[in-house]
Amino acid sequence: MGKIGATERKWLLTLHLLFSGLMLGEAFVFLILSLTAANTNDVGVLQACYTSMHVLSKTAVRYSVIFVIITGILLSVRTRWGLFKFYWIIAKEILTLFTVALGPIGMYAWTLQAVKLTSAEGSSVLQDPAFIVNRGELRTGIILQILFLSAILVLSVFKPWGPRKQKKRPRRIFRGR
Image (cartoon, rainbow, N blue to C red):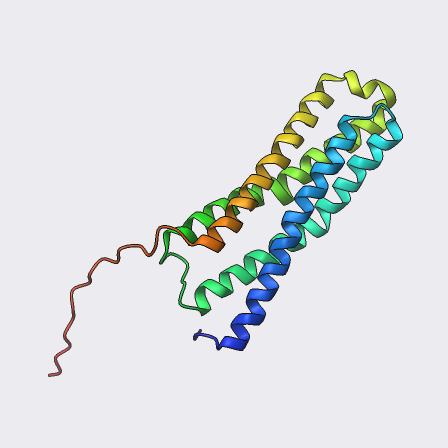
């Protein structure tokens, strides 16, 4: 696969930034819904918050992550950046693995559990130890997701650390017979 031209790169970068922004926005929506759920005694509001988060985790979160990964890989392999040429790109890749674990996997599981608990227990759910632990895990996941996505954004803008040192390969000289 060869390198792409400037116009194609700009379109690919635009898509990458669009879906990256969507991921960060979704994380803040989760934070707002989580804070709303934490500050209510109304079971209906509680169920609505967790149901909304769960629907988002099954739809927008999954698709934005998929498209960010696809466009990110394409940008890396089809431009001069490469997948492993720069330390800042490697750091972004590692943080992306954590955001995938927290986003479509963690948020889905925690919100599903919250929906099940709030639906089954009604108003007594607020004192249920399983609900309290799940709520804490969800809130921690949301905060980590925002921190990781923000770190990825900062790395993308500042591009610290520069290129990796490439090992010099011995030059092979092919001699015909």
